[in-house]
Length: 144
Image (cartoon, rainbow, N blue to C red; front, side, top):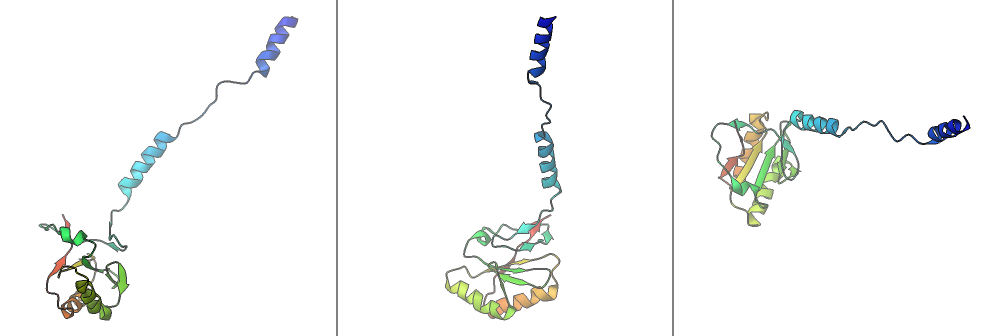
């Protein structure tokens, strides 16, 4: 009887080797995949700013628009105008375009107009581009 009590005490003092634990890596992976699937995809200009591109059926590739010295004017849906990532006023835009042309950029301006931008705002930007003596204007769009 004494031997049974001693073995019982040893068993009760021994730590339990089984631990209950939940592995949540599969759950986290599924949640991450759902996050990326449900996230709205919006085009982001490399220098900042968000634009929803207008959709066209037959767009052309414009690899020169990705160059560092490309003259890119962005028009947002709330009347804001950006030139090469920096917000500018409409009156300063022709001077900044001329400065970019003197820096060695090609004589073409790429316009990224938001799909919901007002036509009047885009027209004002085009007038300012014409004042800078640039006639080659390309609109950046997205394929349907």
